Image (cartoon, rainbow, N blue to C red; front, side):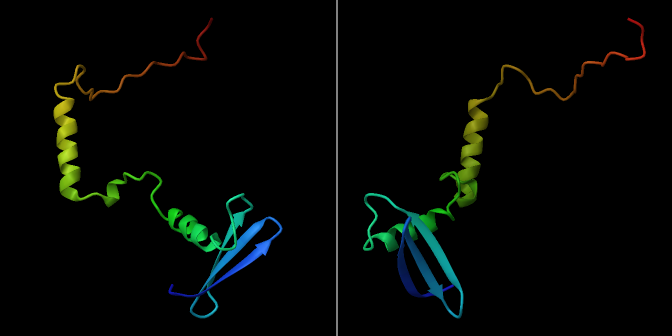
Length: 104
């Protein structure tokens, strides 16, 4: 959506910054009252908040990394952990349940 206009409204709890697009599409960001929040910087703060909402939760996202870099990191991790002190178990152990119909 290409932004065609930006409007700032002051409310009793802070500011609302409304980004308008083509047609009737609009995105509104509500900014709560803060000592450093002014009419002049509300647009910049709203843009920063909006852009951070679309960033990955972890800044070091695997999706954003190059495949060669991921392969290198995997190889380093494997080399650092080999030989492991405990081999990988391919069997599943379980503790049998007590038979409820058996006498006490």
